[in-house]
Length: 134
Image (cartoon, rainbow, N blue to C red; front, side):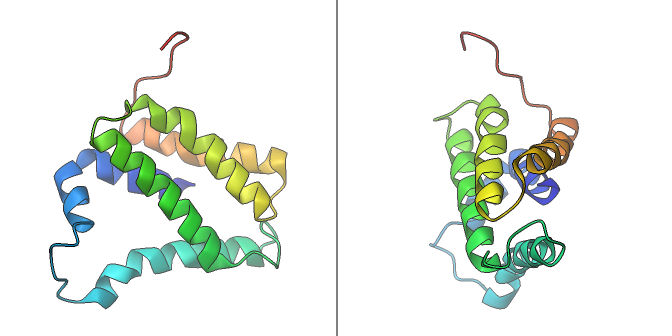
């Protein structure tokens, strides 16, 4: 979850660069370099499975893809103004928890882990909290 928080923090700090990274109108000099961040995410999921956090049946590439797609989609909605920044605080933790529990993590342990990892985003790039009625 901390890796996801760092990803979001970087996107919020560098929104133009983030949008450019996913613009298909540019040819990549080295597509293998562009794939390395995703490989890091896959290795994190693999380690979680090896340490018993995720079930043996959990496919690291599938879980990583789902986590990345979820985060990327919400980030783009925030960067384009469709959703307010606080949507990241409101939606990412429960969505990540649901994904990780589906991958085999225990609900209580997962909620604590997600909360602790997500705190790094709030420290690095404060996002206004959701208020009742917003």
